Image 1: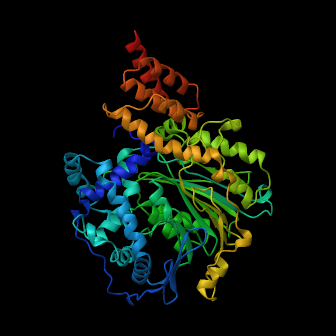
Image 2 (image 1 turned 90 degrees about the horizontal axis):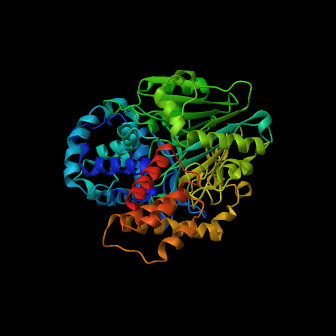
Length: 560
């Protein structure tokens, strides 16, 4: 498993290793905290099944649209929100749990390592609940009552749910990685077709096809605060992409993080709080500033009220706000830009060695080429698969804006209160438009939630192309190549590797993986050719290039 497919390597693999280790090691047993819920009135949901894809309870309901996106509408006090969410999404949420825990054996096969980590994570998570709002804990408690009993041996349902909300942060913090390459941008005034603020984001995050299949769009009307939309997955009450009825938007991009001594507030709860309680940028900044986080993260906040956007940059020991001057565009990838981080050596190294700066420059290039953006043009930018100067850099390259692994892409028009959400595959499927003014009105919610299909953005033709089919086949074959490289008894047929390379010929990783296979099978001449070819391609990061060079050096020694 040490050379597992890059689709699950680096930050993505670390995220899941920590997620599954967290679960499999029973870290949730570290405390027995139960939130206070007695102050909330509760009506236990009696869910009515309308058909296989539509369920309702009072004015709350869950349905699947024709683009295969699940749409959830819930309202009530914190505890009621959790119960309504859990009752309606129970099957979906338990399916997500199954996906998570089914990977334990694959990612963490060593029982000894699980045992070593168990004690550490018990200690590491001991104070997390002290840093999560009590109303969010009550909501999580309600949601968790519909979790699967199958995993109660790991931890009580509530604590399992709480810590899984921090799994992203834990993996980020403990591994100190440049996390997955999310990209986001905001444009307004002269840079948009109508002058209104327009925001786009790719949430580049891959757990596998099963995990991404059930995307969940939540429309939440809390008893206190502002109604909002959030795009994520079943079982998630935090926010990674969302907008509220006042026109505040939030998206998160991971940065380079120091390793803290204890878990604190998961970043998705910080962004949830901004959506629920902020009406403008100053209020969003104030909320972010008072929360103690344990990872480094950029939060791009857009505001209809301010007709502007900023990036709030948070980390365990620093805080900054980046505002653009004399321009009406804002770009965010995975490095910090505010004065507060100007001398941060970790951030400087990240800019020099990662793919963040490359994607930043690519966004600048595309904004120069595409004037007066509208939602369709924004979708085209988010779907762009090329490198700088439109160079072919291979499908799946993390230097591309569209890395062909996104969980979702979202486009926000805060002043119009419109949101476009991508459908499968990745951000290539049809973008479905939602009108928050309609959804959070006094009209029948079922009718209001129907997508405004006249404003939808068409499916990318690439999703139905031969090249896309080849890319999907390349992903499957990558697993075979890496397994064959790791296991001595597995030998591929003579034509396997040439065909594999032909499926994604511009991607450096194809040749690196081929080279490792040949090297481990002692076919050093073929390994040399593969590594040399990899070095002619656009390699993702400085450490990646060094790995290829290291293998080539070892190969040349074998050939002497």
